[in-house]
Length: 79
Image (cartoon, rainbow, N blue to C red; front, top):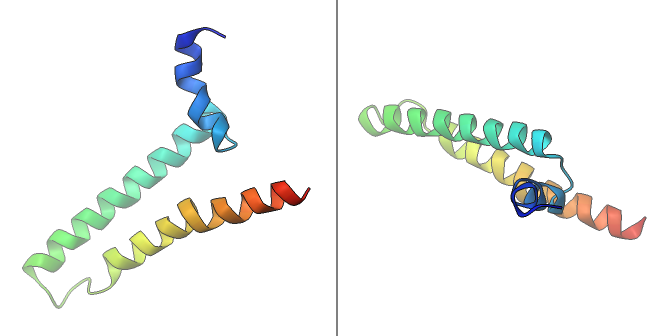
């Protein structure tokens, strides 16, 4: 495998994804984080709005990134 190809596939493969799957996952995280940033700005100016919205988005992302990956990897180890 060429170094350039490895640069694009090594990390996605390490988390059990293809390059394209990893791109989709990363983009979904980026869009969710952008939304969390936007509602945080609204909350900063109008603190009575979006009181738990950003934290809820971040908590869901944490679940997708850390908790579910750990669960998936422990299932794979058992198989």
